[in-house]
Every structure is written in structure tokens, then in C-alpha cells.
Amino acid sequence: MNIKKISLTGMLAALIFVFTMFVKIPVFPGYVHLGDALIYIGALILGAPYAIIAGAIGEGLADIAGGYLVYAPATVVIKALIALPFIFIRNKEALKLFSLKSVLCSIISGIITLLGYFSADLIIAKAYAFADIPINAVQAAGSAVAFILLAVAFDKTKLLGRINI
Image (tube, rainbow, N blue to C red; front, side, top):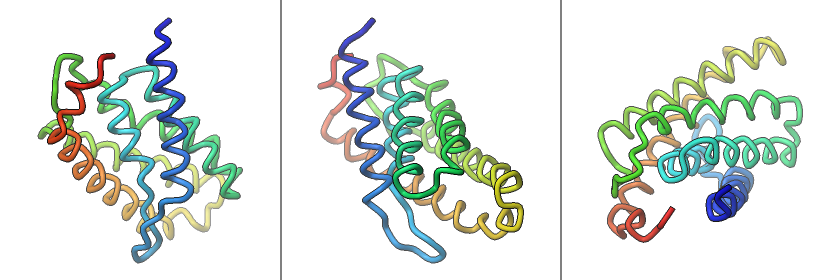
């Protein structure tokens, strides 16, 4: 058991909750939150199962606190799945978050988000399944952009070289 990784997982879950619940960038048709981008960063830094747990807890709790309890189970599964592409390319020795592979992973995770919430809408609120596609697409694209900006910023500060995990 790695106490440092467990502590970082708790802190990451809290950050994901805050940046999902309270940091919303309004865009048409909806808004973009930064929680998904933090899941991507966490997956590259912490790997599995820590990033999966942090993402599921942080965004699941944001759904519950935000009044979307019915979507919380789907969110927990979807947010676990969006971490996987980044976990698969994770290199413990790498000192960079931004790469062509990580950008491609953000696209794959965006597709997982779209398919996941489309499937959830088919079960939960069938009438909204197609109507929610543009909103979820904006969130997925915004998450990719936010991830790229954060990854480049963290790489410039040599964050991975400073974290001893």
C-alpha cells in the first residue's frame, strides 16, 4: 500500500469535484468543466487504479451534489473509462505529459464520453439522447483543449520531475 499515492488520489478526487462542480466555462450550447482534464492528467501521473478511483469519486460526487443523481452511476463508469487510454500510454519514467499520444488519448476519451452519455441517455431519458450530443461534444472538446493547456504548462514547470511517486 502506497500512502503517498492514496493521499494524492484523495486530493485529485477533491480537485476533480471542485473543478467539475464550480469551475464552469460557459460555451454554446452548455458549458465546459475542467474535471475531465484533471482525470487525464491524473491518469498519466498516478496510473491505475488511483486515477480511475479519483475520477469516479470526484465526478460522481459532483453529479450527486449538482442534482444529477440519476446520472451518477453512469458518470462513475464513464469517468473510469476515460482514464483508461491515458493509463495505457503511461510511462512511469516519462517527464512529459504532452505528446502526440496523449493528444490522441484525449480524442479517444472524448469519444468515450459521447458514446457513454448517449448510452446513458437512451436508458435514463431517451428523448434527450440525441439532443445531448452537441452538449457532450462541447464538453469533450473543451476537456481536450484544457488537458493540452495544462499538460504544456505542467511540462514547462517540469512538474513530473518534481513529483516522486
